[in-house]
Image (cartoon, rainbow, N blue to C red; front, top):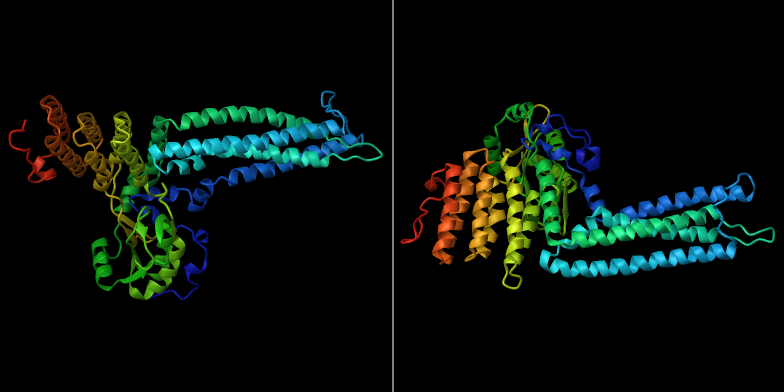
Length: 489
């Protein structure tokens, strides 16, 4: 039953190609996501500066060769490239290098201090977004590249009895880079001043949410839907029963948040061992060492699958947006509930977060969130996971804000308006029922905490609008829901 050739776990994850048919998963866009290695490199402050340092060194080698050729009279530089003698060149390059490295230290120190203070209101993940910003990385890279170029040019100036070697072109390029640095400095100050403004922070997280939704839940074509309905071999329900009854549990070998799952690699591994894998955790979940990570049937394949899972799962100390759109929702919710705290009391920030949450959930409402089933090239089910349900996303977006906004009519009304807006994009009665259930809980909390009759009338009117748009019976959304006696509309 099992193949005897070299197991797939002996190769690296990147060497395992995606099997044909892996995209038959209803959410087949998972393959379009960037690799976790690229995401890890992007969230660093050393990659872009290192690349620009290498580029600056290569540029210096080129200009140095030209200067050397001009020194030996093999070519003639334009008349305007004249920088004086060796001492004058040294003074210019020393001034450039000292000024650039000083600006880098002062500006970035002050910026990080400002971001640290701002993160107290936005949340600690603000610093991660600052590091991830390509504009900030390019700014540091340009400054460091100029410093390295100036130091290399400074070292190339030599004094010889036959004549001083002065790299006129290299010094001129260094002066040009200094002007570029001035422009970059102005851009950086503007960029930071703009990026720490709360509406910009919220809008940036919302853009990340939209991109994560497009990557995780792409719009399906007709051929994808037909492939998703393809059934070969045992059905999903039969396999789930076999996994429950006779499956072997694979324990986690590391603790941390699941950041990335190599779905295509796991399908290839399961096809290779003629097994079925059910993942107990998805990206964004926290796992502890020794806790169940997956279940494998038949149990004889558990050994090979366990070693492969350690390569196909990436864990880390924090969550990321890769394969985890709910993380962006949690970021917006965190900003909202911080704004609603008595210490901050910033209602308008909470309203802004609710608006962007409604935009993201409206985008999700237009997608089909089906079960996470992956098949091999023959159409057999090889991998099963629990996709984030629509109800979970809606509840994560509104539960904490609802609980923090008791007695605040403005926030309650905006939440009901947001639910109504989302309901206009819902594609199934189940989604509408989830939205109406959340609306009912919001109204019930308002009935208990809001005592102004006119405010309650506005809240009830907004809820009636939601109920009209959803067209779902109240009893189906929240059985037994009834407003307190004497407060019914």
